[in-house]
Image (cartoon, rainbow, N blue to C red; front, side):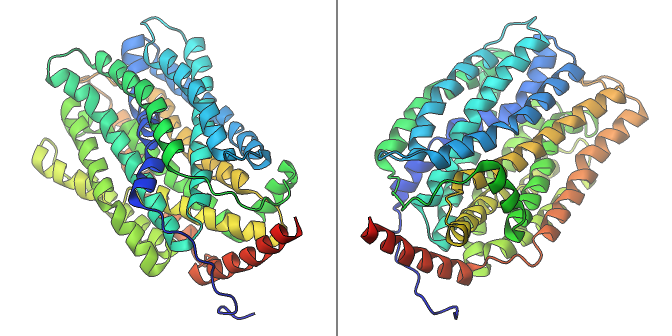
Amino acid sequence: MTDAALPAPAAPRRSNAVLAAFAGPCLPYAAVGLPLAVTLPAFYSQYVGLSLGAVGTAFLAVRLIDIFFDPVVGWGMDRTRSKWGPYRTWLTIGTPVLMLAVWAIFFVQPGAGFGYLFAWLLVLYLGFSITTLAQLAWGAVLAPEYDQRSRLYGWWQAANIVGVLIALFIPTLVMKLGLGTYEDGVRDMGWFILISLPLTLLVAVLIAPEPQTVKARPHGALKAWVALFRRQAVRKVLVCDLYLGIAPGITGALLFFYFESIKGFDRGQSQIFMVLYFVAGLIAAPFWSWLAVRLGKDRALQIASLAFAVLYAAVGFLPAGNFTVTAIGLFIAGLPYAAGLLLTRAMMADVADEVRLETGEDRMGLLFSLLSLTTKAGYAISVGTLIILGWVQYNQTPGAANSALALTTLQVLFLAVPTVLLVASALALKAYPLNAVRHAQVRAELAVRDAAAEVAA
């Protein structure tokens, strides 16, 4: 069969209003995700009173356990049948679970112990897994076309970055306006999440449809796992995503420490650097979606990863104490930030179509659970840097004296390790097999088979 043997079936081009409604829940999800990587570890060590090692251990342990949540949730989604839409159903179920955990985690009182943090992090990650996986899989059926998926996940990533920016601004505004302390600002982040979770869910389910596809037979989870890992496209996307999870995870976990201990800035200035970093990612997100349409998702992601590596490594050469130059440098370094998450999600949605065609099984939920697994594993590994800093007796107190070993370790972990991982993520996509032409053929063959199945039914 030639590449042009079957025309790709027409798919509706979703309006910006629909895509915005679909992406809306990313605002609270990102406002949860950022504190998990950046704010909460420092909050629990400095305000609640747990040691840095205990906090790092709790987050690492829960994230390793959370890895097993995703396959179970993905398996459940693939077996769910609902006229309202299986993914919207799971999204609705997961929201109150997430809200309960947010209340417990963000409104903790000083003196809470390791067990409290560990238990409520488990609940938080369970709700987070359910809601984020359901939304990702929903996006794949909302925009089934190769190029339209780049557009949809571009909206998804942009909304994530806006949510991150909101979470970053809240504590800063609280302190700058004299409304309270940094700890009060963290609690206000919790209020934003609790209020926006149900509101954005309501808008999403009322405005964005969930198209009903002809359901293939459900898979056997363990057997399907093994079969998926044998697929070259799956392995390449997962390995790339793992590297892209560890690298920014390290950045988030160590950014405040690096700029305070190495570059001589205070917490407020470091917060501004992080805001600029994410603003740059938001501004550049449409460019990476455009580049994916022009060159293909895999080539666009390779270019983004290599550019990210070069720009990130250059951060180490920024002059200490020079706020303006550092601010400009962090903004430039953040330009490729958005590409990784949006393009790996769009690529995995394409893989799910090919898997359904070749196996006759619907593995959308399972594939996104694997992608979520590698992302979370990456961030779990990145939290291990806190444990390493504890081993070298790094003192996180602003202005504290640290040994040469502690400062060198901090610089290597913050700069060298992410740079190497970003280069590795680009190399992982070499000879990626699923391009736009192949995906158009897959969609055309699926359309013929699905139409035949509907007639037979």
